[in-house]
Image (cartoon, rainbow over all chains, first blue to last red; front, side):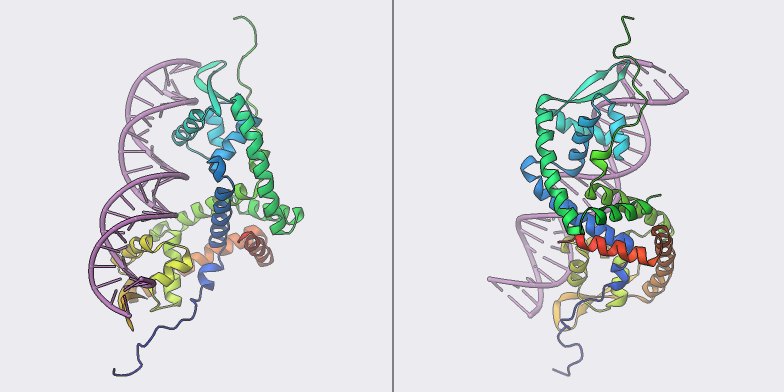
Length: 153
Length: 153
DNA sequence: TATTGTTATACTCTATAACTATA
DNA sequence: TATAGTTATAGAGTATAACAATA
């Protein structure tokens, strides 16, 4: 060998501050972490975050139009079709012709859907309680919500 | 018509608290909003968030191995290849054989990449300053970081 | 004409398996 | 044997265009 120039790589860690001390980056990492744990917590239900939101939203607002649910969740009409197709095939929700507008579908939970929502709510309550504790209690959770809301346009 | 039962749909808004007052949901919405604005701010550079992170990270840690960059950013080796292929084709980065390990690629910025990073840093500084202001100043930003960090495993 | 739901399609992001060359 | 980089591929999530039925 000639000399030590270009020898073994340094085993030191990368310097990441420039990349890491950025609101968007921190938000993304936090969100990915929470969603990863959500997926694990709801694995037995085979339920994704968006599906949880849809079911709970229908439970609270039965009979409202398909597009209303899609819009409030920020999901495109076209993609929402696929999402609720899966929930309908599982027997959790029902499409009925909307009263007063035969173009529209009114969404309802089935009895099985009702029972299912009761169960996933419990799992969600436990899941959320763990995160409220992680963040330091309900006041800190509210502080987080307040800060996150300020980021919105 | 028979009667008013099932008449015109109520034009009231959906009740969303159950869906909305949830840490994961709020994080997701905030992150999507910030990334949407990032995309707009960096449109002239044709640069995605992950690409920004990679370039700044290479600028700070030139010569480190490809896999080291991928790991610290939470990107899979296989997907990282495509990402840096694009940056290499644009003439912003260079793969060199790593000193001491001929299997590995050491990543460097090209001179063009250096100049490019200087420009995108400026855009990012302006972008970040807007969000620091939105959130209520640097102390509030730090508070947000602290709360977000508590969500991580 | 406009809107609701739908299909088709494409692009990004992410995840896994398998190969090669080096170690 | 194990690791670094690569290729191929498949699954989500997301975006747009176009069509039928109805308003």
